[in-house]
Structure formats: structure tokens, C-alpha cells
Amino acid sequence: MKYLIMVHSNPTSLAHWETLTDEEREQFGKAHFALTDALLDSGHLMASEGLAPVETARRVTLRDGAIVATDGPFAEVKEHLAGFYLVECASMDEAVGIAARVPDAAFNHVEVRPVFDRRLLDG
Image 1 (cartoon, one colour):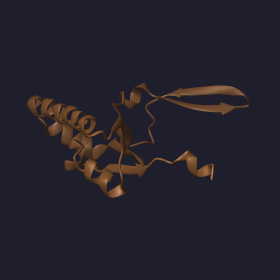
Image 2 (cartoon, rainbow, N blue to C red):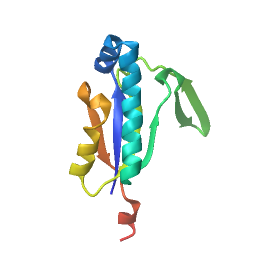
Image 3 (cartoon, one colour):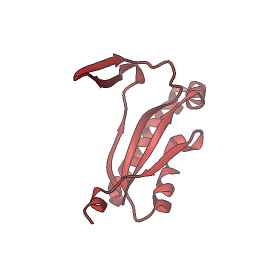
């Protein structure tokens, strides 16, 4: 089954980031790369990406057939998705074990959510 491991940015993670030295920030990034490599080697990883800053985002709606796109940041949002790992695992417990290896889990929450299997609709 596929699971999406979501890494969030929020006031807690940003405050932690500000306490890190340049060397610690570099090691943090390397830890993400090492996890990606390990998940590739184990066959769990389907995709993994960090996302550009929220300020570069667009919020899109369709109104009366017209596309309306507004620029970020969005003042009401204190937390946003900073990156993700899409993994294939035998169980939620296995996905949770992988999520615990995400460097951010040491100081912030990391969310794990099963990916809906469309094949269930065919039955």
C-alpha cells in the first residue's frame, strides 16, 4: 500500500531552524538525502520532494468558468506542507517507522496518511 509522509513547516519548526548553525543546517539536509537514498535502496521510495517556499504558491479556484489564481502567502495559514515522501509499505506500522526516520520528526510532527487506492472502486 502507498503512504504519503508529509513534512510540515510551522512556527515550531521555523523556531528550531533558527537555532541551528550553518553546519547543522547542512547536516539536516544531508540527513534527508541519506534517508532518500536508503528508501530507494530498500525499494520503499516512490517519490520524494521538498517544496518551494509558500510565498511562491498560488491558490486556484474556478468561478463562473473563469480561473482565479491568487498569490501567496496566505495570512491565515501558520502551517504548510514543506515536502513529502511517497512510500510503498506493507502496513501503516512500517510507514510510521519510516516517518520516524525523517529528520524533522526529532522536533516537529510528521504526518503519515494512506493513499486512496482507486482500485477499490472497481470491485
